Length: 478
Image 1 (cartoon, rainbow, N blue to C red):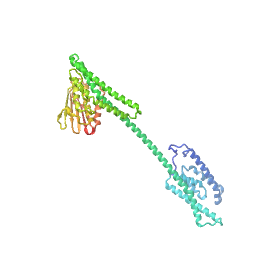
Image 2 (cartoon, helix red, strand yellow):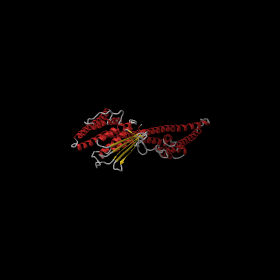
Image 3 (cartoon, rainbow, N blue to C red):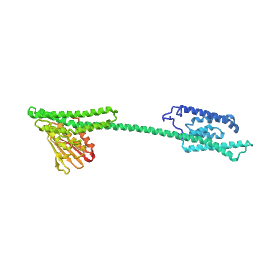
Image 4 (cartoon, rainbow, N blue to C red):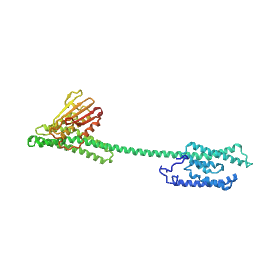
């Protein structure tokens, strides 16, 4: 908008206009052309009596009307110019249409109110003065008409008010309504943009939730299956080594490997069944509408299945100790588990696979206690995280340091649980047992611990072994 009140050439929808020059629409240009023609004809017609009255040639009066009338063409671009022109021709008693349309356009434009009031007042004053002298002259030339002195003044004021107030008030109303519509449209556009941003953010959060739940499912499946399969490979290697020397021990190892394989297959089948069931549920509902909740439910069920892995683990220990290698059923602990009380069974599994493992548990005051006193005494998430750290650490010892001695230290404190698993160098002179590794074991341990607000540290020791340490706060999980 310029200083004269011109507005940008925009359409009603806020986009660029499709009309010529400064008109937003072609019909607006046609309307202004017609108004300019009517104003020109009026001013030229009124210029003839003005020329006679003032003693000027008629051509001058017609030329004055020809110059003033077409100014209405620029009323949308420069409304102030139109009003000033109408004020200038008031003494010539011409331009009534020019004044009315100019005041309306000025009041409806974005010109400041003080300028509108000033120009409207100047127009009213000029009209009153011009009407007063014209009527006074008419009264003078008609001796039979003798109105009171106040009559001419009142009539002049009435004419000035009638020619000025209605177009100004109507223009103010139209301008206010137009600005209101524009503000509502801008607000609607802003809300639409905001809703679009919220939808994008919701989609990002949903995608993040899906990725997080997929990662959680993968971590749970890794913890449940990888440990058991690693023990199977270790027992198979031991079976190959003693097959000819000790047939009885080879038979026990073979039975143990078979039991482990069947249990691993059962767990895999159950987990895949959970995923297939979840996919079928999604197929019955709107596509993608509840995927984060579905993944959370899947992860929860997989986690509960992971909790049951400690019970078959005790069967492995019994099979390794029994003369015939037959598995014995073990009762699953109450709750979601696995619990810290099952660490003893986990250590026995590694011992049955030939690893020398030492387990030490310290109580609140630093005194030594047994593994049976370890739980359940904390939140399920805390005990699960600590159990999985120990499980994955022992699995890594089987994979990458066969024959190495390992030590598991567990500290049960009032506000936190600390665990450390450390192994020495491989006594067989090998650094790796050749077991496949996805490289996600340490990452999964770190994710479990940090998700509860704990600290996780891992790295090689000076003696050539490896150490894994974790501290899990109790209050965060609760």
